Figure 1 (cartoon, helix red, strand yellow):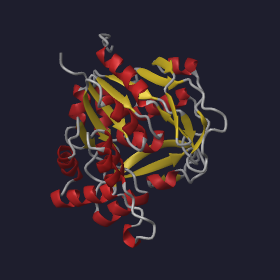
Figure 2 (cartoon, helix red, strand yellow):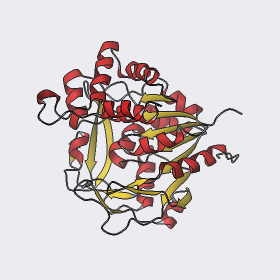
Figure 3 (cartoon, rainbow, N blue to C red):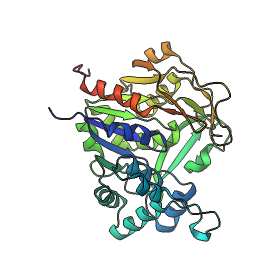
Figure 4 (cartoon, rainbow, N blue to C red):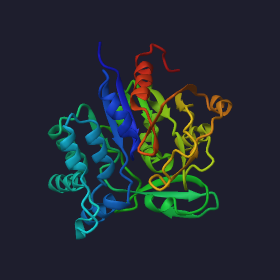
Amino acid sequence: MSKPKVVVIGGGTGIPVVLRALRKEKVDLTAIVTVADDGGSSGRIRSAVSIAPPGDLRNVLIAMSDMPKFYADILQYRFDKSDGELAGHPLGNLIIAAVSEMQGSTYRAIQTLAQFFHVDGKIYPSSDAALTLHAVFKDGHEVAGESHIAGYKSLIDHVYLTQTSSGASPIASRNVVKSIMEADTIVLGPGSLFTSILPNIVIPEICEALWKTSAKIVYVCNIMTQRGETEHFSDADHVRVLHEHIGTKVIDTVLVNIEEVPEAYMNTNKFDEYLVQVDHDFKALQEEGVNIISNNFLELRDGGAFHDGAAVAREIVALSQSKEVKL
């Protein structure tokens, strides 16, 4: 039997957890990764070299590779704050930037590095160009730049993207739409709703592919709300926002964590962007037309609340192997 084709869409620190676990399963795995980050090392590099930001791609390369931990530690090594122009840059970001410049394309650079690091699966940036994320707030105010969005104190109405260099509408990288159309299962998240997941989905070709694909679409709901993005959000609010941006109800199944994060566990100095645990609204979820899988998907470590990658991967594989046909 052929392996089920699973496509994971997102960015940030959320999807590497799931990708690392799915890599150990019998699936044909593809990651589609956001390129709208304009903060920190990625922001500085994309300004200097005019390439798609490398940070999220670096984390996905490591998650999907069989490289020894020591090699991963080298790629993740971040130069000390006293190191002048190199301060704060992970070595892996500089390597991706160098190969992108050599080959004239971040897409080609990631394909080369995926072979070099023995990646098990395929990795595609959602676009081959750096993109600027725009957030329009409920009060009509607009903020440009992913790193600036959380700083404005209002509720986000919607987000959209432009190409950073030209202001034109974003274009999906090659093979991205093909992967979505050929998938058995598409996984959205986990990750920041407005700044990691939606920056892929609002690329018009990707959005259209999600309308048309026959794949099952699964959303891995966040465990914690996020400052400046999803304050006071329930699980149903996350799904509603996704559907509003896509333009129709396409999500088939939502994975919801029901294990409680112990009171006062979170290290708020280290994870200051996270607020409280996401509320459950199963009635509103059903009104969004989704199936609900609620379970203990929680992993507590390093003072933070994360998804248990193995538990999430088991559910995704089971759904991928199910004979149920999407209507």
